[in-house]
Length: 437
Image (cartoon, rainbow, N blue to C red; front, side, top):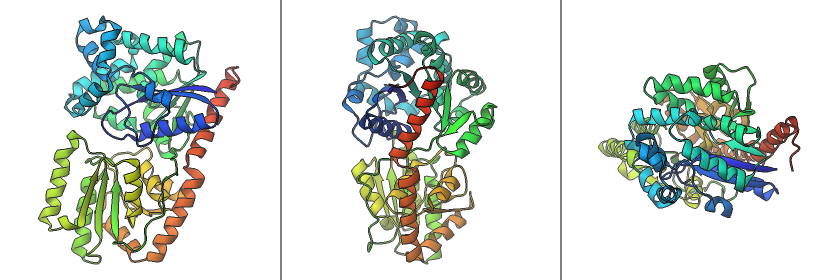
């Protein structure tokens, strides 16, 4: 089977969708499939090594070129050698660090332009992508890493012989809802129309499949479920004997619930049942997150707890695995409808039990693995009680950790994700009269 993934990069911080795609592509390659991954907008920030062909791949719809072409007519006619210069990875990574400065209006304009790409000011970039796919990749199937790329489908099918397209959902509703009007409504409407042209729609959880089915007015069953999976290599057993520690591993942002986590920890310490229990916080921290992180550090300092809180920004894969092994329990109390929550699976793979809100995809993951418990959403005291109950029961911590690790191996491994993808791709190739090679 010959598959090309189109994946939106972030340039400056680890992104779950990027890591998911890289893990899946690597696993497909090892299984004998001919597979490639083309980054869109920005370079990908990965915590695992990419395949050589992925590292060499050019970046399409480079963020600087897209911005300039959207704003200034002259850049829609610049020579390709100049476009390639502006697609330099170093230059794009530098621009990505300032992406938080992009105005909501600009984000709305660019989102709608990508959903209506053949009618937009970005047709030069579209031609570059199609030319590359036609003359270099020649895929049998194209996989779009998120549904906001579905605007490409019409032209890809038109110019590449009705090629099958698989489109993944990865939490797009939060971004779309953040856009100002009229871009918000227009983007939702355009996405619904464009998704009809995709052969298969895939969500990482039953929760998110249901949410997007409702938001987009799709037929029941139109969105299939293929859970994200992780490469289990390097995840070790939870360390015994160290200090008790509550852990968080996600982007250090308000939306991911870091502020709620800190507030809950302050309540937890006020109760006084576990005065030596530490709080350990790891994850991506961008320039746009730094002010919020400083606010949390000041809150902790005012409570006199700074010595009990450890910060680990922008960790590598090896550092992440070591970080997880040093935790007793794990929580990421996200504030928005989380489509999956790869961090929960990573914690469980390390034998660390999870306590998270009974919302979004979290109950589904806890039920499927047995590696966590859920508490009332939006109730910080319920979160604290969840921590206290587990910390007071070391035997249950061990038992839940073991259940979670087994559950991840069975349901959320990269092998399970790869086999599910191969089944979906093989099915649509057969339906199109193109048996996979």
